[in-house]
Image (cartoon, rainbow, N blue to C red; front, side, top):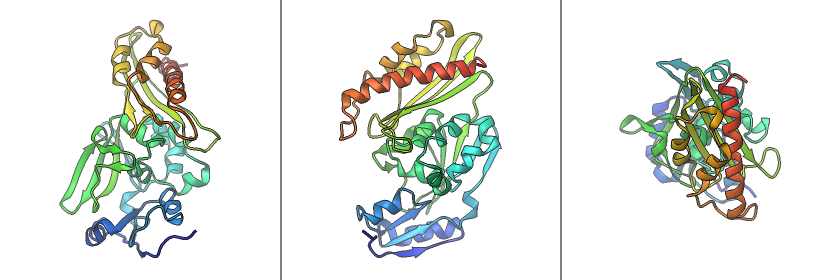
Length: 289
């Protein structure tokens, strides 16, 4: 099939992009790479009268380290964060997750902001954003505002963005020394969306778990933090950490979906195993091994 007809706009400034979105309202859609949007349009699962392509807004690209954060422009490609030395050094969880997104052709065109704003509950980058308590900078008709990751994801494909809003950057806090990170997922084939997955960060202090973040994806209508498992892990000596039990705790209150690819029971069981596996790998990395 082919997309329904639409007007194409390619602004070169953020103000122009916001203005176009405000002018067209709900009849417009942001194009931020198009790796999800274009197939949806081609299959006519959605239609819009206008597309606002952000590809020429250079101000939305780039990676900067400042004030304990790494800021990633929303139009920075997934391939860039996969290879960028600043990301590798200061936000390694983001680089680990990027390698699991689709295939390299997808990552060459897909953008960080596009994936996060699309809010697919089975996608890796929204889970990383939630795990690291990132701050999302948003431009709208009333000016700039910042939305915490915990408030950004509302439901499947739904976020805190309004129709005339543009996600401009995502600011990821830098974890300190003694930190380890892991992303684990299960998919039917390499490059497919995950049936279940986990993004995990651990910081070890004097042999104990001082800080931990566990975000699960493919397990609900949004990525979800395993807050109970996190609380149970903090303060535990690394040598006494029961990662398998923490995995069971992480999924005990979740109600994952059932579909043609996997049942609720399967996701429940696999999710617990993945949490344990990710915790084990993150702790090993935090301990330097």
